[in-house]
Length: 396
Ligand SMILES: [Zn+2]
Image 1 (cartoon, helix red, strand yellow):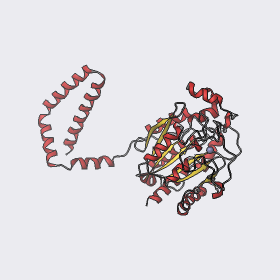
Image 2 (tube, rainbow, N blue to C red):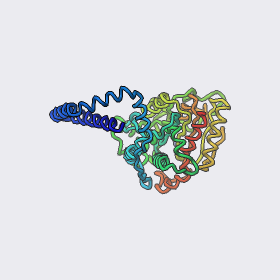
Image 3 (spheres, rainbow, N blue to C red):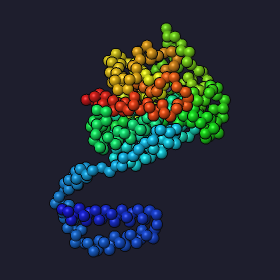
Image 4 (cartoon, rainbow, N blue to C red):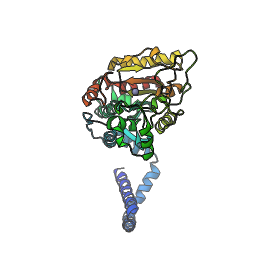
């Protein structure tokens, strides 16, 4: 048995070696082929024996896969430093580090590009069949969610492998049942504008549009680079509508602006389409859209029934218990006042329990001081595990 495995491994290594060398250099590939032929000649008898062995032990591959599953997974704990100005570049670097550190637990993907050409990244954390979604950085100037979500992924991954509890949560058990899909920065262009001004925009076409847009100071910029508030741009029944008997909101802009303009039509923006596409392709149970202003939670969806809202309310209360973020009453979740079209409107209509979580105190200067973001971790740190726990509960 041991001999058979050894020979199998040898064959695999030689084939792999010949294949990968062949891809870069034709001559070495020939040398590789000669080596394989020599190898086959030299070990003819053993190979024959091995074939016979497989013929009589057809369940061997199943057994081998069981052995492999028992082997400890490779991982290298890392540190994520959010105690610095943390923007698109820092996030992209850390995403690559996380993927390398925990290859069995963390995967990354690019969902698409922003209007100004920056990648919209997705991080998948966990091995579970049930999925939920976390979004951050929908509003440019609300820059806290991105570093908090990246730090969170790292802390949970470390605790997954150490099998230690995190604030009373069994991380391993939860992430074996649930996979968290995390888009840490939905609106990378908006973040660049809010923190670095328009000078870091890349494409001429976008710069020309951007320069025409009113709504300064830039440090309070919420929209994308084309002046569309992405949290007004998502497809939903009441998009842009003022319903009979409803008061029209004052927070509406009808032209590109730093905030409150929903775009010429739903999903007019690349960022919105990338996210709608992700949500259409995956059966998410819950959505947490993490914003950064006011330490409150919006949970109510007038378009949904009472039972649906009761479940979402229960989830909101769980977050409140650990974070101290205040759960706002249904009257604070406006609809039909001309401002519909946020991420949670889109998701809730598809049956996803959807909450907007505002981290950070309300009255803080922009761009947010780094030390205030770092301090917010203590409020925020359990949010992803609450999400995993509630997702697994809904799946039961
Ligand atoms: Zn916001």
